[in-house]
Image 1: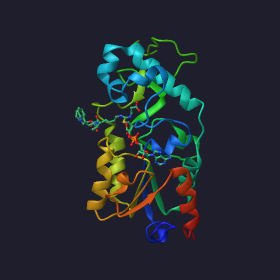
Image 2: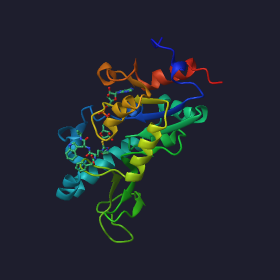
Image 3: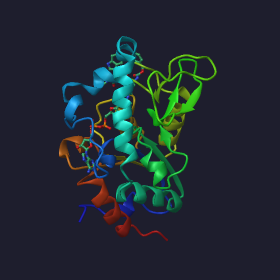
Image 4: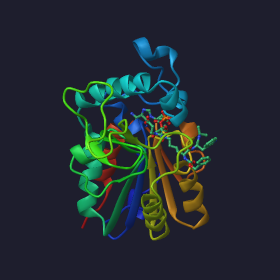
Length: 241
Ligand code: BV8
């Protein structure tokens, strides 16, 4: 079925690290970054809107974009991929889930201690790192209760540094892993995109799950398919005891 025996790299005795990207939320109806955007946002490029420059230039536009994306997330639900990965947390000897996604669907499906490399669309913050939930209803401009600065999404934009503690935790998890699994990412955005190569160089077993064969060329093992379909099949094939 997979062209290899999953138990060679994924059984209950293994220390497993999983990295997910937008593809894991695709079956929840959330467009990936590679998908063209819809409607009013069709003419915008995420890589230009998800930047501090865009926010400085037109904060209202950027906040409207995130409000639109957050509303899509609020109307979506975790799919079988999210639930399967939450199950994995209970079954491997050691398990760490790293995500590039900001939609919070892993947590919603029951995953805990998720390393959210790029932040979370449900949190706002000011430039002084005071954190807030989105006011309901949200009206621009929402200001920080502590320092009155303008609130922005608690998300890592292009050109911004990641939370160094989270980054260190990702790297430590991969260093200590037996197997590194990469699911639903085009592997374009750094530093996340560098993790697969680093894992390979450290001699870890590596598996990529993606419908696009191009995304998996570098890995030791590759399963072509959608995360929401492959992960339940994979779990079924693993000897868990
Ligand atoms: C940094 C939050 C140090 C935003 C995101 C010039 C100046 C400054 C920096 C750079 C520069 N040049 C390069 C850089 C580094 C830059 C970078 O990597 N740029 C890329 C474009 C080359 N990185 C950064 O800026 C990072 N910070 O480096 O700090 C620094 C600081 C200053 C100066 C220099 C260095 C910060 C990057 C974080 C950006 N924020 N997200 C938001 O969401 O609004 S990134 C965002 O895009 C996502 O979080 C995600 O990481 C990325 C999208 O990637 P994917 O998740 O892979 O999604 P994609 O759509 O691409 O692919 C989907 C995949 O799913 C496909 O493979 C598809 O086949 C597959 N798929 C589809 N359906 C399914 C499926 N798979 C499974 N099942 C399915 N059903």
